Length: 340
Ligand SMILES: CNc1ncnc2c1ncn2[C@@H]1O[C@H](COP(=O)(O)O)[C@@H](O)[C@H]1O
Ligand SMILES: [Zn+2]
Image 1: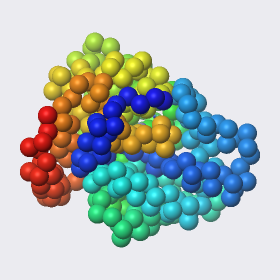
Image 2 (image 1 turned 90 degrees about the horizontal axis):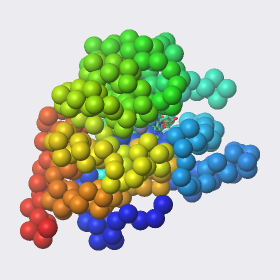
Image 3 (image 1 turned 45 degrees about the vertical axis):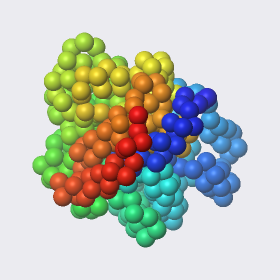
């Protein structure tokens, strides 16, 4: 994809302290790591072809995940990729990262949901030794999973709190039905876990209505709404994670200037810019901010505020949020006199 921002915009956005709330572990891998692992695991070359970049439909993106998941099958690799992904976000000046991943039961690889997640947490601990970025985990329920698998993920998340702070529902939006996962999500809420749900990534009004009535703590995407849903969404005041490049590349949205970020932002609805899959979509959080600056004419002050306001939508305690604000305020005090 050609650049949709200037170098100056990118360098400003890189210097901003940032919060990333919507990043899938296996979608955030470095290309070089995927290639190295594909060689190591003797992956069929016809499969690696799928990994070549370019515009992809949403269903093609899920084929890409199928291939990536074939090279991240062992615990040591999971630990490694987690460490690398966190390091990459830290290098992009992300000071708080909520990283999400789907715990996988893979008996053929001696892996359980618990051993998968523990391997990820080992990577998180290693990364913490080398950077100051604060990281928390969300465990994802994949829409291909049944009610029992969803419940197992929720139980695991509760057991691994406080490193794990919540649950995400994601996966191919054309697969499965809301009723399958709702009991597990209700249970998660009772256990004190926070909830974020991918919603309206494709047009599915009845499901989107059910999700809004369920009232998760945050929503992801909200691309395809009719007038009734839009009203219900605005009335809900539920913060939404928006991933510009992801929606454009998968063709959920036609062009950056047409992205629903703008009406949501202008309506004062709480929005948080995020990457979704920085590896698969060749992006970074700084690039997403720069794209927003260019497409929606945001000032440098707007960009700082967008990043600052994201803090209140994190699943951190009030005290931990306050600590982050101190760092943002310091940045503001030092730099804001030069902003337009
Ligand atoms: C592009 N839009 C999207 N919509 C829905 N789900 C998505 C997604 N991008 C990623 N995922 C979800 O995240 C998994 C990869 O990371 P983990 O294996 O969990 O670390 C994908 O398999 C899918 O379930
Ligand atoms: Zn996502």
